[in-house]
Length: 191
Image 1: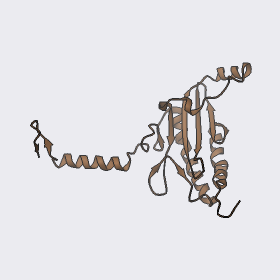
Image 2: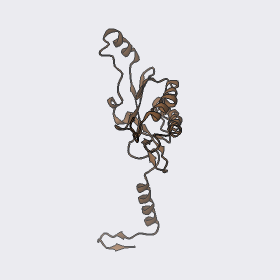
Image 3: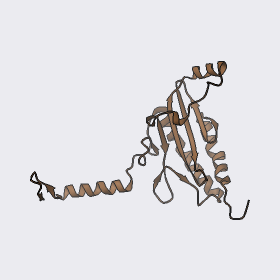
Image 4: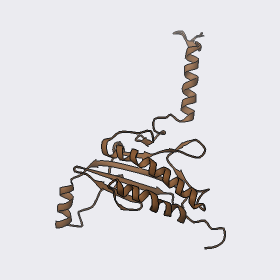
């Protein structure tokens, strides 16, 4: 490798050593980056979506109805037709993502490692943070319970409005309490 070139090897090793065993302990099968879990009547999928050129990843999840018996029967009779679903196969109401508070204190769906990719200990700490969030992902996948780090609407951080929206809400409440000018039926502004 040339001098000054960066690599994702420390982050990938941290995911392999910390996150993958945690997923396998939760009953997931599969290999990086896509993991599946089949229950009696449901399929659960979790994918680690990496940036094209490295530097960050996000966690996407999906759950939906699935017939394990039909899947096993197809594997015996017609293996070409037997395939597990993909996260994109399900509509947005059956998908979610994991969020976390990044180093700057902002809520983000991206787990960034641009600045720490050459530090194996920092990469392990980020992977450990992700592994600590996996039980919340398991609750959403299994029971549909949305935890503080699971976003099922893909718009804002889970359970928290973004900073611009909260500032706007605070200004609106302040104006209402202080008697902001309102328009009469004639169109004249009066306090």
